Length: 574
Image (cartoon, rainbow, N blue to C red; front, side):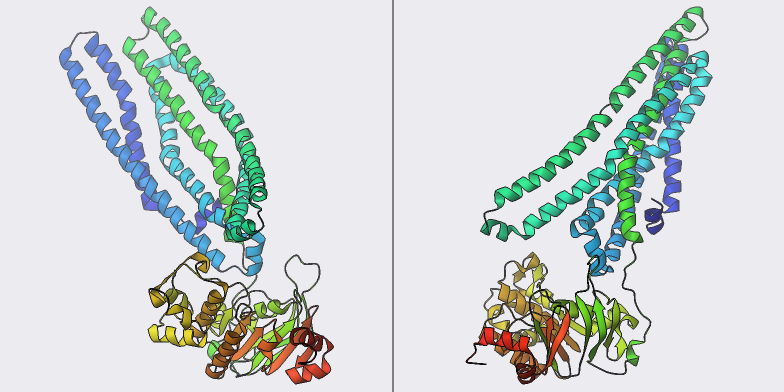
């Protein structure tokens, strides 16, 4: 827990104020049994109504004051814990935003969601209990022991047996239950993962009639989670019976011993009643403290998982090169780059070398799973190469600050992701200050205006989460328009024309070439027709560049490219 409390610090003034209020409430509650004893000894036994009324009024005032103070302390404790969890959640979100793709892959989306929501909520609930009960219970216990010893004499010796037995019983139960805390969090991650997969792949599941199979898979994971939770629950369910038995035996012992002392005249009835209440308060304080401790294993497991996120440093760090000192513009160069994904047994890219220039279109083509998209991911530093250099404008990409590097790039990923909002807000993702004229210009270049103007609200028409209310081709054109809005120096298109028909593909590329200026374009493509007019075509096979040149040059010199062309265009056309 040290990591999370050092990251989102508690405010000392609020803790001090809370401690004073809790102390005041504890003192007020401890006065009640003493006042009750005086009422019995001086008022009831002497039949003095005036003393009874005065002491009753004093007790009512003390009770009302204690209620007000308790209300204020609960409110402050809730505010402290809520503010703490809010700042902690913001820290986790900011940390995850800085992760490279490798760290996100390592944790997994479902686990990161659980850690930033459920885990932080558990820590918040524990902190609320700790601030409220964790401060009050020790004060009540100490004060109760002092008052009990002062009023009860030998009767209070019962606590010397009751408290160790209570602590021992609660400790054993808590120790056994704590074994299940980490297991439950891991099984909850699994449940979230399956649930997210079923939501994201609902169309595929329905198309293949796999609803029952997915339901069984989720039911198995759910049953596993429930089994572990029930095992933990069976253990924790022993806590209240143990406490009640100890309470009952202790109360019986106090009343039995006290009755003997009252009978012999060594103790007054009022003192016995007050002492029994003090002992109950001490035991109640110990029980409340045990309940707080009971929450600790879960909170500790959650805090460790949160701390694991906060302590993880991204493998991709900012460089210190001054952005304005770039010697070139709109250029990308790979120098003997080798790259492997984390955990992979062999590199996906091997000794990749090529160079692009301002105003040129560089296309990458090859078989499926040959490393084409991986080349693009290295340019904005979603990953870093194992060996070699990626030079952007003549400078190693690792030397740039990430914000500077990515400000140069307009990236359209293979999986087009849109965000909930409207069309305009998605376009402005590439340029926050974009106006309607900028939207129209970008949409026209990306051939997106034709479907946008047909929408009821035009550029302010709603976009569902993930763009699910748009077709695949519409999402693709929206993603391209978003990149165009940025007016970058380097465009990266990762198979971004695959969902377009041939006519739209040709028109879009024509518009893009006319508007790109000195920007460099690097595109991954599957269709030969998309890259015929590229200035440079890279043919990738098994992670290596096996051919490089224009369409005509590759038709003569690269057997693999010629084979792809013959399959797509036909031998006669070739």
